[in-house]
Image: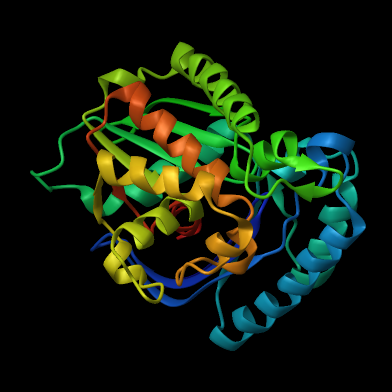
Length: 313
């Protein structure tokens, strides 16, 4: 057993996994898994810089995570930063802050590396299941980007494209500094057009339609699954490997895109930090299902975070 600490810092959230890795069984035994909405990518699409208040929120979460890592005595730490910090002009400020707090330098990984970690984390425990046909298409819908990976036992093709729930919300739904409530039809059409363009780009590299099983990752997908399952409180065990049919996803997208912020926030399983961006994330998932002809999405709670954990085990 090796005790590892993996941190995934994305555009919308920062997440920590402290786990014992058992290479013989292929299991990561969770000791602590947590998520904090920090919105690091606030305004990056518009300004090209990380906002100071976003950095402050992120560093506060890092200090909390440092205490958890110390408490559990993790032997190895890896901090991976994704879309927002890849794009920002002042990412050196971010790197210095993380290094001061956690003692490790954040790795601003490429989209291809991000895709490989996501695939490993999502599919490692699916090996041997005969009810899920290969190849898999793993889609990780983040705040700033979405990763597409096709593979069987390893990655065969991958592509990261710049559509995510935060980026689409800020680009199309924000007016006079506030998110339109509820979204207007023209705004939703603009999001759909951006997504279709991104899918065209992804399809140049990744044979999306060859996949036999669609595996969906990250907060937009898991939130949609929780709504579909009718959960009163978020239950990761119930969500993990849930199979949500297309018709249910479509109905939930209709509900979310026509709801006000207050109505979305009132959904029992809705994280407060996700209520204003979930409609955009849901539109990304539905467009992917339409493009690949998927009749269902298999939802995984294990994703890039688990892949990072395995990379240091």
